[in-house]
Image (cartoon, rainbow, N blue to C red; front, top):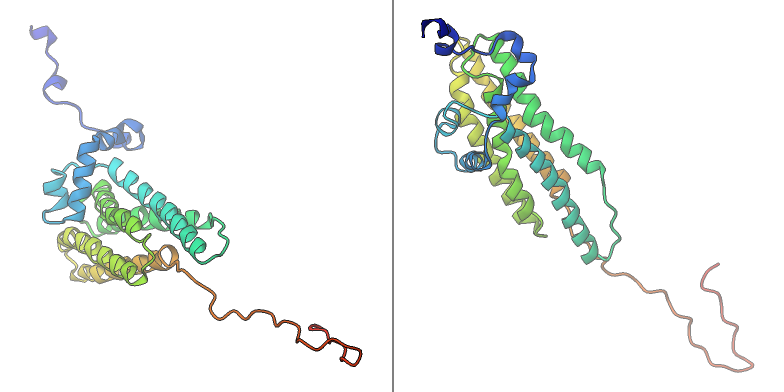
Length: 250
C-alpha cells in the first residue's frame, strides 16, 4: 500500500560520521567466520593476488588481524620458553621463565602490526590518498604477520643456522607481501617522493625481523668444556719421618 511506503526501505541508511565512535560502526569489520580468516591467512603466506581487492573482496576485517597478532605474541613467548627450557636441560643449567619477554613481544608486535599501519593511514590521508581506509591498512599488516606463527614453531629446533634461514625466509616473504600490496597505494600520491616510503618500510620490517631473531630465536645449548677437577691430596709415605700434609686452600 502507498501509505506503507518509506524511502529508507529502498535506500538503507549508510553509517553516519558520528557512528565512527559507536560499537555498531565496527561490528561489520568483525563479522567473519573462521574459514574466511584461515583463507586470508593462507593468502598472506602465498601472496599471488591483490589481498584487499581479490582475497578480501574489498571487505577487509579487523577480527583476523587482531587475533593473528595476538597469536604471534603467544607463540613467540611459549615457543621461546619451551626451546630455552630444552636448551637449559641439555646444557645442565637451571631455567627460569623470563616473563619480560612477554611484555616485549606485546609491545613490539602490536606497535609494528597496529601502530605502523595506523601511522601510514594518517600520512596517506594527509597526502589526500584515500584509496585505503584504516581497516585496509590494519588488515594488510596484521595478516602479513601470519608467517611468524609457523616460524616460531620451527625455530624450537636447536640448530642456529636453521633459525637464521627461517627468519630470513619469513622476512622476505612477509616483506614481499607488504610491498606488493602497499606500493600501488603509495603510487597514487601526486608527490613522487612518497615512493621513498617503500625502502623505509623495508628497513623497519627487516629491523623487526632481526629483533625477533635476537630476542626470541637465539637460545643455544652450552656445555662446560674442560672443567678441571679439584686436585687430590698428594700421596706421601706414612711414617714418623713423613712430612706433614699441606692445606690445599689458605
